[in-house]
Length: 209
Image 1 (tube, one colour):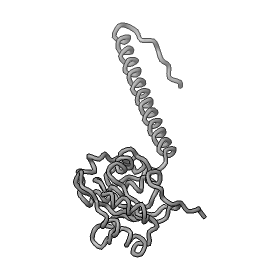
Image 2: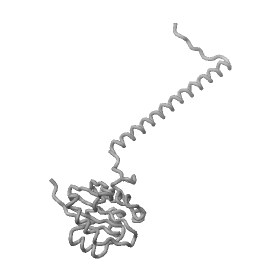
Image 3: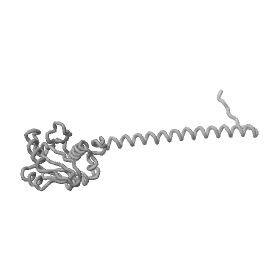
Image 4: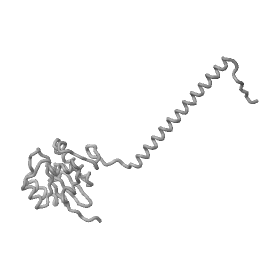
């Protein structure tokens, strides 16, 4: 026999029916809100996942935690570094400019603090000469860089990098015998302004293939 529902009779039954209806409405509203929140949450997760897939892998980061592609170092930051951090900073700048680079280190480095390779420019050796502001690198440093770059490290390019200056003899000798140099002004252009090394220096180019 099908159940029959009758209309409530009297004030007591009407009050009870009203309370039941209100409770049912509250329950339905709660379920609706829960479903809406779940839908918003799932949509947010889907959007974040899609954004990650479109963006691709995170950029390569340097030792300092900054993206290599956007690395900038002020002269004040460079001046505050020790010898090891200065060498690491030069390596990171090479990586920013599209080189594969490694920190060679002072011990056994034989006038090579950083070595790197580029498909268009070949193999490079950097000799890091961190010094006090106002000090100058002398010509003997250029001699060492020239004497070891090719014979010892098989490099096509030798560069002496300092946060100070170079003597006139050192710059003239380097220009004459193919030892590139980066003094304080060039270092600011390279590290702080973000100018790539192959734009800063007249590095040789070799054909691809």
